[in-house]
Every structure is written in C-alpha cells, then in structure tokens.
Image 1: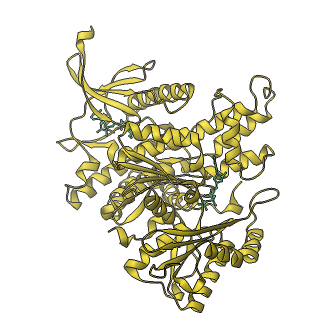
Image 2: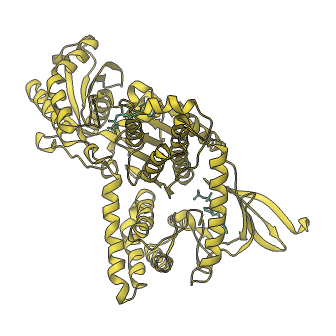
Image 3: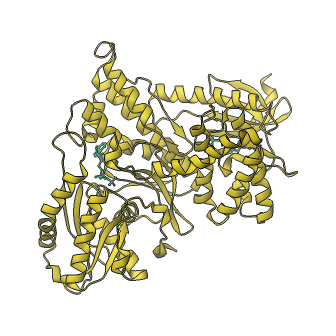
Length: 224
Length: 337
Ligand SMILES: Nc1ncnc2c1ncn2[C@@H]1O[C@H](COP(=O)(O)OP(=O)(O)OP(=O)(O)O)[C@@H](O)[C@H]1O
Ligand SMILES: Nc1ncnc2c1ncn2[C@@H]1O[C@H](COP(=O)(O)OP(=O)(O)OP(=O)(O)O)[C@@H](O)[C@H]1O
C-alpha cells in the first residue's frame, strides 16, 4: 500500500506546517504536516498540533457541504498531525494581487465576501482569512484553505474579528488596493444576507471599527 | 563637549517614565536619564504619574545634560513623544518641549512612541528592514515597514502582554513591575498545565489566559498537585508561545529577513530564546534591542525626531498637540521611502 502514497517534495514551509506535494492512490495531493515546534513546551506543542489538525480536517469536511470550494480531505493522521488533501492547482491571491487589474480583483473579492458570509451564516469562523489562504484556479474557481484556526461561533464579535483580520492584511500588505477590494468584499458579504439578516450583518461590519480601536493603545487606567 | 556635533534632546513621556536622551545627528548617544514612577500599591495612576513628572522633569533634564557634559544651549533640536499614551503624561512632555523650543529658539518635532521603539532598534542593532515584535506594558504589536509605513500585522485584541504579567503578579502580591519576577519564578518549574491559548490570525488575546491562570491559584488543587511556580511557568509559556506563533506567521507572510525584539518585555530570556528559535528556522537574523534602549527612553524619541527633522524640518507649534490614541500605521515614514 505504501507505494501508493508518494511524498514528492516540500513545496512550502508555512508558519505552522510543512507542505509536501505528492501522489495518493494516483491523485495529486498536498500532505500538510504540522511539524513539532521545539520552542514551546512539549505538551503544549502536542496539544496545539493535534487540535488544529482535527479542527482543520473537520472544517474542510463540513464546509464541503456549503457552496464553497475547499480542498477535499483524503486522509487524516491525527497522531502525526498530518492531513492529506487534494492539491489545488492555481495561484495564491497574494501573488495575483500584483498581476490582476482592479476590475478582476473586485470581482474575486466580491465572491470571497459571499463565501465568508456563507461560512458565518452557518456559524463557521475561518480564523485566518488572508490573501495567502485563498487560491484561484486557472478557470477562476476560488478556493479557501488553511482552516487550522477555524472555530464554531454565532457571536457578532467572533465574526467581526474574522473580517477585521482580513481587513488588516489588506491594509498592511496590499494598501494600494485596500479600499476598493475591501469594499467589494463587504458588498459580497452583505449581498449574501437576506433582508431579515441585514441588521445582524450591519452589526458585524460596524463592530470591526470597535475592535480596531480596542487593540490599539489600551489606556493604563482602562486595563485590569 | 564637541560643539561641531548637532544635538537633539528627546523627551519620552507617554506613561510612567519621564525619559530624557541626548543624541547627535549621526546617532551617537551622550546622555540617557529616566525618572520612573513606581506605584507603591496597585496599578498606575495617571494623575500621580503626572505629578511626579511635573516635580522631576527639570532635574531629569539637568542630569541628562550633565551626563552628556553639555549645556542646554548646545541643543539644536527638541523631540518629544506626541503619541500614543496617557493624556496627562503626554501633556507634560509636550509642554516641556514647547517651552524649551521657544526659549532656545530651536525647532521642535513630535514623535510617535511606537515608531521610536523600532527606529532606536534599527540604529542600535544596525538592522535594515526588520519585522519587529514590540512587547511592553502598554503595547503588543507585530510590525514591519511596507508601502511607506510601519504597518501593523498583528496586535493584542485585549490586554498588552506586559500589563497582563504585571496584573497577574500584582494579584499574587508581588511588587511592580511583575514581569521580571514572573520570569524568575517560571524558571523554578518544568511543569506545564494547559491554559487557554488564543491566537486569531496574527492577533492574540490574553484575557482568557489571565482569568484561567488566576483560577488555577484559587483552585483546591493549588499547592497539592501543582504550586505557584508551575502556574507562573504555564502562564508565561502559553503567552510567549502565542507571541512566537504570531511572529512566525508574520515572518512567513512578510518574508522579512530580520527580526527585532523590543519593549520592556524583550528583557525576558525565555521570550528571546523562543523568538530566536523561529528566526533560525526561517533563516532570519535575530536582534534584541539593548535593554537600556528597549524600555521607554528619551534617546529613541530624540533619534526618531532627528530622522523626521532631516527630511521634513520641524513641526509648527500648532502641530504639536498630543494624540493619545494615534496608531503607528497612520504615520508616513518619509526617511525610509
Ligand atoms: N490544498 C492545497 N493545494 C495547493 N496548495 C496548497 C494547498 N494547501 C496549502 N497550499 C499552499 O501551501 C501554503 C501554506 O498552506 P497553509 O496556509 O495551509 O499552511 P500554514 O502553515 O497553516 O500557513 P500559515 O503560515 O498561514 O500558518 C498555502 O499558502 C498554499 O500556497
Ligand atoms: N524580564 C522580564 N520579563 C517579562 N516582562 C518584563 C521583564 N522586564 C520588564 N518587563 C515588563 O516590561 C514592562 C515595561 O516596559 P517598558 O519599560 O517598555 O514600559 P511601558 O510604559 O510599559 O512601555 P510602553 O509605553 O512602550 O507600552 C512591564 O510590564 C514589565 O513587567
């Protein structure tokens, strides 16, 4: 059986995991291996890696049921904190940001907004929405990846934080297009909410500003 | 004193430190003096801090000048911390700076405190373009230069790390600042008890961790299956692992090749060790800002004032109002673009 599983080469060393491309019973796959981090205590390290591997795998399986593209999971090895998933051919949005015209970008961001809205309406928090965690395929399908920080929640706060993280990545890494892209994203996000959900949706969006003023400089008299 | 050098007097006054630094336009430091408000009991009280600053500022300036072996007349530029921080503290610094600038008829420059932490680190560590982890009593920020600004990639969603450590230490009856004591106690334990670990993208949250650690001390298992050192060690391990994870994520995202650790908490050896580890993993150079310049000080304000002054000249007095909430990513950095 082992000859059916071939880890070919390391394609990326992410912050959390090492990603290998390879073959799994003839299918092109990614092996996402959460490697031990020796800087932290062994127990904490093991806990984090196992929890996130399971979290990510469960999220990928669950989210497949919605109208959102995420890689198919083929195998989970919680003990070694590894997931085998479908290899998505395409380019990271982060790299495409330098190549696409603004019209294309806005189109993609609007769709991404819709996707995140679908997740949120189903009580799913991505947890790490960035332009590195979105892959666009050659036929323009948009895939969400990296669900290691995924969480279940219906709270406005958690959803706002999710949007806030994305907003900040856009500001810090793609400042030039930030306004236009983020507005398109919010447009898509709003559109996916029907009338009865709009109040909630607006609360979520409004709360982003509240979060932004919070993490800043917490006045000493306001601290614990 | 060699009068051929142009000198800047920098005033740091964002919180409990009233700091004065004297530095020349090439980055040579001649005088550093700090007057630090230390609470006898409880936390930091802005009004008491302000009173101490008012009582001592003259003396602190004089001491710095005498260390630099120069007179106030040798100063060519005044820089002061304009943002962010406690209103009452910021005001004292601004008033003193305006007064000196007008009396001596020399230019004045307002400086953002967080940017100053990065700039003094770049100068002292001779580092070009770092990803900076800035951890102190008032701030927890992962920042790097991108498109003309010091962008914020990650930050705390609630408590700053130093404040969390100080508060926990205070609850245990330890004196302020608690950070160094926590480091000592943690060294006495190898036991790790699971505590809430909350990382969201490149942001972090410490309030759940703080509450849970307090609960461990109040639990009936306390001093039976674990002791104080174990709790403190677990708190520190969890908090620092979170900081290290977001720093690593930002490093992978920005692809910077240098990492700078600064702020008062940078003194912690365990944190240094953890950050150094990920730097090795990513082939990035690792530098800790020398302790004298990692905590709040006037030199960092003076040096950052010089950088801005060289490109843009001084500020008009009307531009010197304090901005207690100004974020570092709102400010353009003309000397790097
Ligand atoms: N299924 C996949 N198909 C194709 N490429 C993938 C796939 N999964 C991951 N990648 C690539 O590997 C990179 C890192 O993956 P991922 O974000 O899952 O790892 P990580 O270590 O959790 O990252 P982070 O640095 O955000 O913590 C992605 O940016 C992407 O380029
Ligand atoms: N060895 C250490 N381990 C952990 N924390 C430490 C250590 N030494 C100092 N600290 C913490 O550093 C903080 C003081 O930092 P600093 O001198 O930068 O002043 P600050 O006013 O808190 O900073 P800022 O105004 O930049 O937010 C305190 O919270 C203190 O407990």
